[in-house]
Length: 186
Image (cartoon, rainbow, N blue to C red; front, side, top):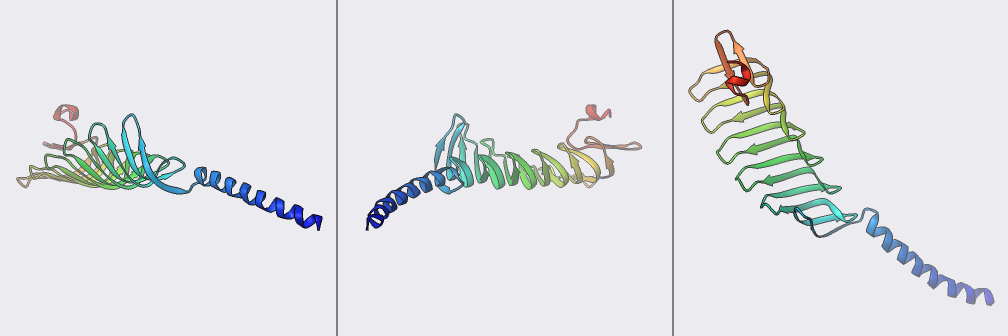
């Protein structure tokens, strides 16, 4: 009989300790919750994991810029849309707070780039269309035409070849994409 009395006293204490440990584990072990956070740079509202943005959320910067999309470990990661107060916007893939993967960037003036991104810059295959009707389709590296590509101007002139740092020269024909004439030596 003495054993039963001790057992009945230990079980409630064990249950209390288990509940306390479970609660502490949930706060720091990956449980997803929702909430708001304030930072020096702006405010976040959305899913949280381990006290930081993780999952779907919205970050509004003090400047008025706004990001809505996926976060992981407090950084933009996955699909999302960033709107600048200038009227520019980007929608697409993010990795480690940078545009990386596929996405569409639209400038307020109507210019647009759709294609691959790496570390925040157009890199890989992509198409840029300018508001004036010019178009470049081909390879990019570091925001410049690099590799095989074709630029077609609004008036129908076409420049096809291997671009280097935004420059193409084919005899007397030349063109630029993302670079100036001076930078290309034309």
